[in-house]
Length: 372
Ligand code: TXA
Ligand code: MG
View 1 (spheres, helix red, strand yellow):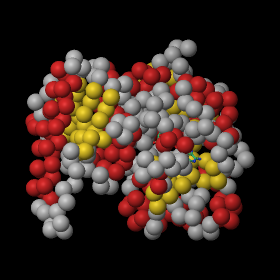
View 2 (cartoon, protein in one colour; view 1 turned 120 degrees about the horizontal axis):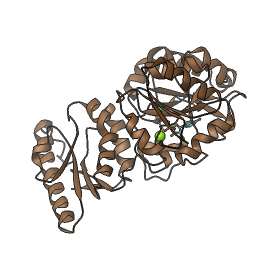
View 3 (spheres, rainbow, N blue to C red; view 1 turned 90 degrees about the vertical axis):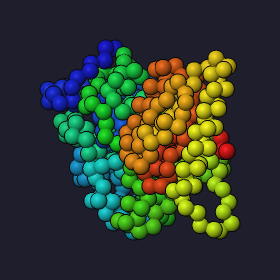
């Protein structure tokens, strides 16, 4: 199959992409989070092609992308949701009002029309309204609901440019709409509305604090907070090794020094920590290089000068998590392009958006953390 790459600014290309989707084909398109690989969500055969193109396990459900809120009521069984928990529909509607279009996916009981092939056999459906104008225009032009996972080969870092999509999908899909680099760079926050409390199944740009400002208490799936606990994540996709570069990535962090309850100057202690981390990473890199391995450091703009190593990748700015989110996957792919065999990364700030960034970095590292 020849994969056409067209500019997403070209309306004729969007119309053509819409026709491809209507007739059961596959089109990759930009969203504000990462590029998606789209197919008709209500056509089980079309959805099956997504799994084949990605090499994705078929128990891993897809997110359905919509362009207007009416679509939610066609796909989600609100009667069932309300019978389970009467407060959930109003809460979902408040979240939709606050964050859609945008990087938030909500999980509802599904209606009959959503095929099992789209939901990986689950009785629930994940729905999101993206804010990227090309995504919205494609959904509207095609007149369908678009099932779309991230447009990477299963297990690889999600694509944040059309070139990344082409690296993984060329020859496997009908078309790629090029919308340039995406804005956010990590996937949407997923919130399950079908339990006792709204539950975050995958952290993302919309943080727990932002959700709680709108609807009060929100919990986080325990399997995310305690990755070693053998708990089964409620989002099936979160159980797989993910976002992983080809080389071996490890995260190096400083152990929290017990201070016997005496408050420390946090800036100063953070400063001492980063110097220790940089020293240790420099040592590890030298060790691997001496053994003949191509080895790289993942760091921030502020810390880059602390390393005396050959391959230094600046992911973003320590003080600005959005820059780190935007470049993380591209950096991991760049490590692959340069055939880096070992990578050592600093741990980034864990608060707010940093929680989502570290969730992805830890998964990319297969949870290899070196604590010093
Ligand atoms: O930002 C995003 O969400 C991107 C863009 C393209 O919209 N999409 C994306 O899709 O990240 P994907 O397939 O790579 O990740 C979807 C995640 C998987 O972890 C999957 O298991 C979970 O959503 N998921 C989908 N439907 C679900 C359901 N009914 N219940 C629980 N988890 C679900
Ligand atoms: Mg994905």
